[in-house]
Image 1 (cartoon, rainbow, N blue to C red):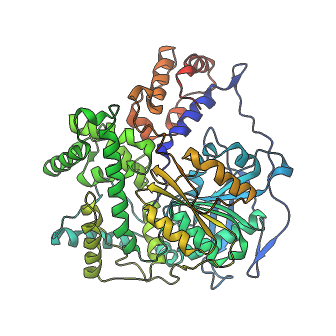
Image 2 (cartoon, rainbow, N blue to C red; image 1 turned 120 degrees about the vertical axis):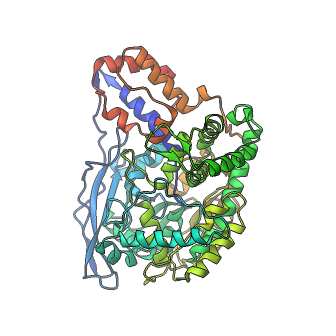
Image 3 (cartoon, rainbow, N blue to C red; image 1 turned 90 degrees about the horizontal axis):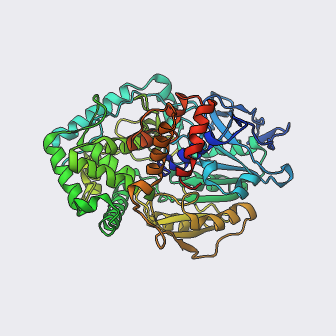
Length: 584
């Protein structure tokens, strides 16, 4: 249930623009004067002292467009033993840019997952927010316990060629999946197995309340995407009197049963794929019009790759497997901005058996890094979900549940059938707390009609489960809305800043004006590639780039890491070609 943001196209554009903003031949790196939002006070939570955060410039977070400060928050491993073993939560901040007396406080984000890195996501979130939000709030996020730069879970992770599909009745395949799961657990170090029972959402919510105190805020102002809605709802139940404003975007069904979520999530992905196919088939700018209909193309590719075993990619050391084909399709459904990339990827696979783009899309969903390693998001995802879920079905019962989920999906059945759930993981010691959050300030739940990962119906159920929640419905494709769907911005900003709650039944439409497919040369990535081609023609020594390169590295960190942005000749080339960039 991760939040995928258009594969960073906006970040790419902004980074390139930043490289062009020079004065007198020098790149300007001066940071605006900001209010730090810290003081010398010390707060308490449950009788425990919480010190203010000691902010320092981040050494390895943020990017050329967004500078971040970092800090560490110390919290108990087990809140039942608050003075016992302590762990660390990594926190980052993009400080408010407005006048100090206009600052409201901190706006805390969770990007989803579970297992998503809040610090990594904070590198682009400021680029999606309005100037009003940036002026009034420090934007803050954190890696939840078990994740990323916090005290983290550590197991061997290499998912290349390991994305599993399971056909109905494949007993040998199921046995192999169980053996793989056992091997995976055996690769986890002892510290991970000690930490795992305590990484559930209840403890993450308790950590977030300590973070609120450390930030100096009387009430929590929060935006949670996808799994972040579960975290936010849990926070409201545990700390209803500490809520200022909660935006729960792309609601997760209020249940601790992960099998129930799997069963209903497949329906959401089916609907999103059918919406993509219908839009593609109706638009002459969609590449698949030359080889479609879209669903027939996908069915043919699935049969072809199953027969061949794999498709080649641009990387001689990697191939696209049948499981990675399904993963790439699913990943692209998270954002309508990814639809043209999916069409291009499917076209390349159909025309040339080229799996490069599909593999890059899939990599974005499983945390594969440019150096071939993986972050720990998948490991954290499994342990966090299982820490929340009190159920520990037998292998036979889990297989029956996975079969039941598969039976409800038309296009992703074999993917869902391969789920081994929480088999082998220690029983939950602190299962998810679900409640109405009685007494909490008004909460806004946002649901997209075409959301693949958290079906719209889940947002309806989440809003109905919370006493003070209002549902905001968005007619839109993709996963999440605030910061990515224009029609949502003003009303949600008003709620966050002025605490003006949207009216009951409020809604807006993105689909009414959306152009899902544009000619390739007019797309953001097409314009970025044309910009670099022009810069090379102007004498800039920069590498050739492909669409796959930009998708794999949407912030273009590797490109900027290999070139000298202070080189006057490079700046001249960039400025000469700047008209080719997409409008910012």
